[in-house]
Image (tube, rainbow, N blue to C red; front, side, top):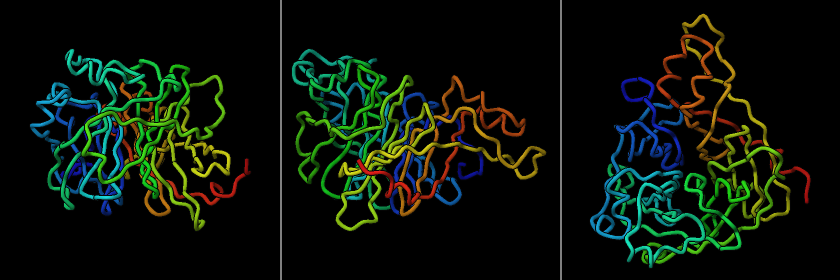
Length: 340
């Protein structure tokens, strides 16, 4: 809901992170134009905006550099997290930049991505503790290992980012050339943004749920600390096509836990419909972990979102492509399931 208690119009939820007792939201390039390149500050108790949308500006050094043409338009942002070394820095990542072409000089410098022709870009957004402004001040292209066979699929790129407590940042690939999701990682320190060369990520080699005949893309990622002292923690991954949440043990001592999900949309209090209706098509694209709760947000997939219309009282919201925020308590079973 906005500050006038109206449901949002088509923000195309894609990035979601908990910061300073609120959730920060970022949409992708298919959002309504007035919602693009905006950060939303969401009250986790009410799902209402704490402030007007914040426009993301871009520093001159970025606009005048190799990636300036992209950032002068509408980049396709697909994840959001905050820097554990500096909470006035947010980090996002670009996905489909196929509508832009690098200059020959920049192609010679940044053309070996082992993935898409236009590089995946990690993006630094500077702000203040109050999140009163947002400005892109640094960008780094990602180079994947050739052995990962990521493939040149601009719309199947990085969709999740997460920091752990040991100086690593994880990048979740929606799916590679074999239609399999992957998780990459790299070290992150105070000098990370002082460089402008490739971020050379490595395959984490994490065991993921065994594939079947369906596609199981990862569409967001966050870090879940372990209740066990000395354990490195877990990654929480959401897969939008199959309504699953994956709990991935960073230590790799446990098999990944697959949590099957069902999502319910509330109806209005004065409605003659039931209080909740089970959603037909959810497409969760954001997860934020705080304490013992997961906060989830769905991407209002235009092609299928109206399929959810059951109660006439909810038709307007679904037709506006208004997202829903869900909460899920951390389940102790995630930490005690069968070992490898």
